[in-house]
Length: 153
Image 1 (cartoon, rainbow, N blue to C red):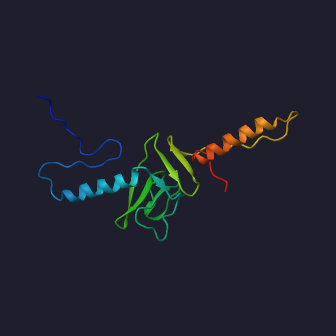
Image 2: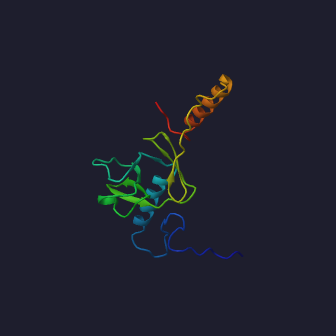
Image 3: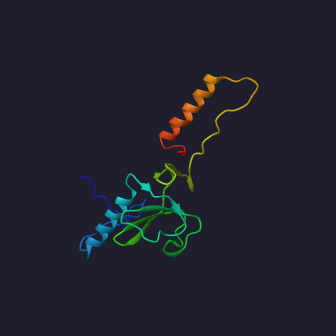
């Protein structure tokens, strides 16, 4: 017979709280965990900001900037999601990716949020190779379409 698993009070990565036998008001624990999961799964953020938006809509998720104010104070670099009329916060884990709708590109967390920067298209030089330049431009555009580099349109 296998041994039962013993859980800590919350999950190690995102702090989703576990239920325990005879726990009162279990619905609060379950609802908070569902709200956090809704915020984190296949995450797309509106953008990055230091100030909470003045009229947020339910379900919005933002990357909190490096100098947060108001309700976001003390949550720099975290994800802020609007759920049930309040802000929920989740500390990102290294390797986490989100799609930044404002920048129209992916952001990767590696101790901080980082985004790829598009290289300049080749110009100048003593020998001009039109095919090589076209191939480099196509590669840059492919990376933009994949959401790795920022879109310019």
